[in-house]
Length: 95
Image (cartoon, rainbow, N blue to C red; front, side):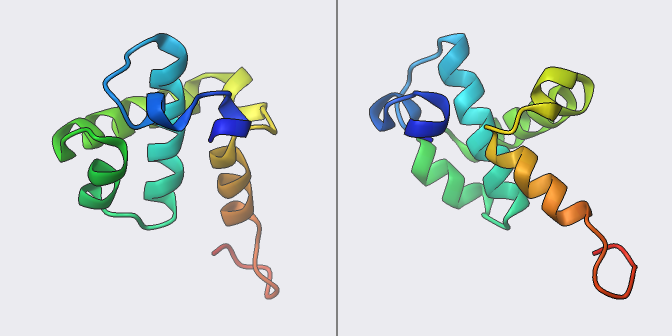
């Protein structure tokens, strides 16, 4: 996340709330949940309570679907994960 979003680990896992840092946290939450991380695990890593993680996930997911710039950015890990999961498997059926 540090190299992808330009946010230091201390800021990502701390109480900082600037727009850029919140967006980086949301990307981490989206990618983490997409890969199966629990709310508790993400809560421990990011330093937010599980209900906040859940709420940020829902908001970020909605924003991700609505915002063309976010959806088409190749620098966001969630975009790559989402595209990978949507690719059909070898039998021509979705994952």
